[in-house]
Image 1 (spheres, chains in turn orange, brown):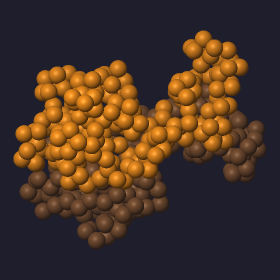
Image 2 (image 1 turned 180 degrees about the horizontal axis):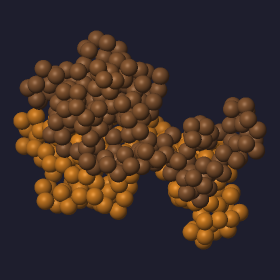
Image 3 (image 1 turned 45 degrees about the horizontal axis):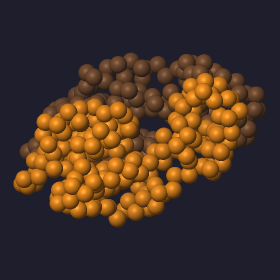
Image 4 (image 1 turned 180 degrees about the vertical axis):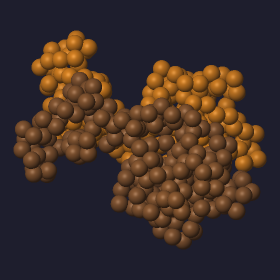
Length: 203
Length: 203
């Protein structure tokens, strides 16, 4: 019996996916939203965690990093099957950084979900072919960690002055970062750079 | 037998929700992504359409408006069950404008989904109580249609000058619209106004 923990923030979709997984005789499924995922993993000790990477909570303090720490396998990989989309390389990259074994497109068919779970449970890698292009893009986020930090604050609506105060830098430095971000993302202006980066799931 | 057409753009989630609905003996379900929804409705002639309102395609040319035209009931309402979230009043409002009979939170339990389908099939209204606050907000989008148009272009990354040229207005007029938008949304600046409006699903 493979014990599966399914992590998705929306109750109706979580229940629907759990019903799909639970139809299989060899899979036993529990589910939780991100904020309760770590606690649930302590209680049920899952063989595989199937996680929705598109939730903002996945990057939060009780998100992917802490859940991954509880799902390490003997060789340092993680018994995670990440649900992602090829159009958003950011979440894919975050799963990859945690050495997730499995990557499944949300546009995959149900039987591939089940196949992915079984493969990760055996400690084997599972990568949905349709995610290939997303991976290619994920490997080359053009922005540095510092630039991503500046961009996140800008995307929240902070002004240059507010970002500068928050990061203890000068207004001119922030303006330089914003120019570099706009250039690197191929954007027309700051708003466009935010739009592009959010679309890719980088911030 | 109630014929249900389920419209959701993501295959895995669509299949999972369809499996949930299909477990009920009195419900017969087909499913399609938004771009194929109208064609599917012609073929199957559904009694109820269950539609994901959060897809950008729902506002597109083959989206909600055209599907609704095919789901009118005798009294002018629409045999639609809209899946939405209380935090995003924009999609709720669009479903309301099409006189949808049913409104279900994506955080509702599976049995409420089934209950909602049966009620809409009878031509009765179904409103998830947890969407109440969202409805309150949906009734008062503070922006005019013109302001929403300006904001949509700005959110796509267009500059003041580009928006002015596109709408055949002067730069000063666009700047006035942007100030009004920023004030009305309670935003700190233009980027913040875009963030707030996108969060609410208005653009």
